[in-house]
Length: 150
Image (cartoon, rainbow, N blue to C red; front, side):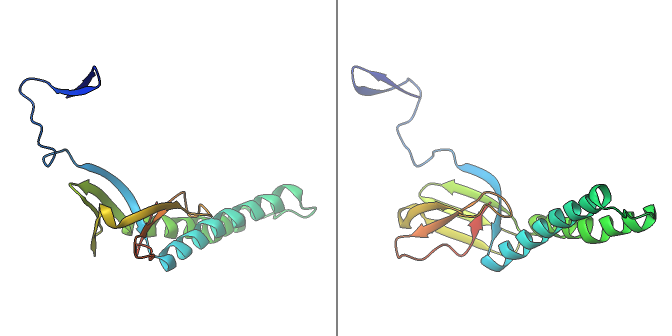
């Protein structure tokens, strides 16, 4: 533990000044490529838009659907299935993001990406937060990291 006294750093007794053994930062995220993000966003927004359209027809139409079974099939087929598809994609693309030492590591089931922290120049939030709020990492070379993180 470091404390501030008179503008100098002090080390408490029994503590090390070695920073290489610092605790790692770890969090869970969803790592999307561009196409995976687009597919998840389309499924999610399609499910929400269809649900709104069904409810609008139910409440504002002069001739609402009279068959409850047909209405349940429409909700299940056009809203619940796409939402379930988006949830499955999110689950499949789940990742563990770790910063340990001077390396950022993104681990998914099928891939592992390691990036030295000094090669990251910017953290850019997504302009359109779909399927959820997220970010992409811009590297010093000008390229973006292969995956965006939600």
